[in-house]
Every structure is written in C-alpha cells, then in structure tokens.
Amino acid sequence: MDKFPRKNSTGVSENYECDICRDTGYLYNAETRSAKPCKCLEAKKSMAVLNRCGISEAFKSKTFENYKTTNAEAEKMKNTAVKYVKEFDENDEKGAGIGFFGQSGAGKTHLTVAVANELMKRNIAVRYMPYIEKITELKNLNRLSDTADDFGRLMNDYKNVRVLLIDDLFKSAKTYSGEVNQNDVRIMMDIVNYRCLKGLPTLFSSEYTPFDIINIDEALGGRIIEMCGKNIVVIKKDIHLNYRFRGIL
Image 1 (cartoon, one colour):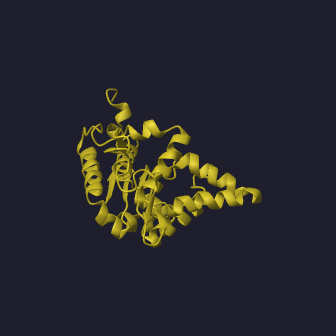
Image 2 (cartoon, rainbow, N blue to C red; image 1 turned 120 degrees about the vertical axis):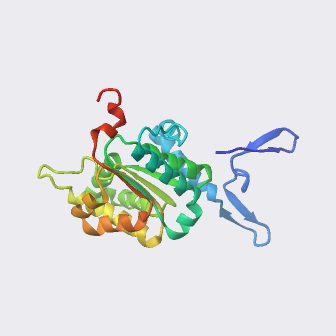
C-alpha cells in the first residue's frame, strides 16, 4: 500500500498506509461521538489472512508489469484485466466481476491475482479462495455438527467480502465416475448465487470454460456469465499456450 508522509507531535516524519483514518482503522465523528470502520480495515484483514496462510509474498509478486504477453491470447487477457481495474468503480456499481477460463498455464491465476493486488492497493478488500484447498476445508467442516459454526463463518466470509477471488474453480473436483462432485457444486452455487444477488464483484479463474460449467450446473454457469459480462476471456485449449512448456514444445 502507498505510504503518506506526515509528522508526529515531536516533529518526526512518519508514514500512513491510509491517509483517511491515519491507520486507526476507524473514522471518528465528533458531532455524534461515534466511529465507523474505515474502508482500509477490511483490506488489512484480507492481507492478514494471506499472511497467516504464508502466501502473501507469492501473492503480491504477481503484477501486470511482470506478466509476459507472448501471444495474442495473453495480450487479450492482460488488456481485459487492466481495463477492469481502470474501470473498477463502474464495475463495482454493477457488481461486475472478471473471469479467465480455459487452457492451463496461460497465466489466468497471475492476472486475477494482479487484479486483486491493484484493488488492495486502493484499500479494497479481496478474499483469496484457492479452490482445491478451501473447498476441501469447507466440505470437511460441513460434515460434522460440531464444526457447523466454523463452516457458516467461512461461508459468510466468502459470501460477503467486497471482492472474492475464486482461483482454479472445480480443479480436481471430478469423482471416479468422471462427474464433478455435487457437494462442490452446491457450495459454489451457494457462494456465487449470493454474491450475484448482492451485486458483489467476483474474480474467477478456471480450466473449465463457462460452457463446461453450464454442463456441470446450468444455474451456476449462468450466474458466472451474468456476473462477468463482457469481462470474460476464454483461452482455447492449446498446449502451446501453456507457458510452463515454453522452450520444450
């Protein structure tokens, strides 16, 4: 986050991460003698979650500047991401999200995380949901009655955060029968439908295309298309677009 210079009572220069609340996290109204949370508070809580997960440095390292556009598909994704951030206030009013779908290794996660980083620089709270890890946690919490409250709290976090990043939607979600686990579908539908109805922006990355997701669950796929609107890029399945194989193929 950007720092704002100031001087304390001793005249020593200091810096604020938030010039609005001066890093107190709250805005005080002298007339009503009341305080309300500053918008930076939720963003700081989101970063604290990343720190506890030990992924904050890797997360923050993903930027627009270090995303390499080596083909037209990558260029289209980056342009869409940069435009989304530039127009975020307008997108936010509409509850519009953004989604990158298709070919593995095309840089979908890098760009959605870069979007999140740009938003967090503005003190906009973003909650990161790495799909495999968090869907497993949610399903485990939902299996036992004594963890029902923890399940509800985590679901509430994902439903209500200002911006949610769902990374690698439905990754490794198929059962032995080849179908996506229905518990995964129900949980994701609950989160996505709630956010859609509340007009809360959601960032998606997935190797499944929106039409693949429609075949899994029509209502869920429809919600994602509705939420992202024009901010969808589908990368065609082409192993040559996988940057991990660059120099090999």
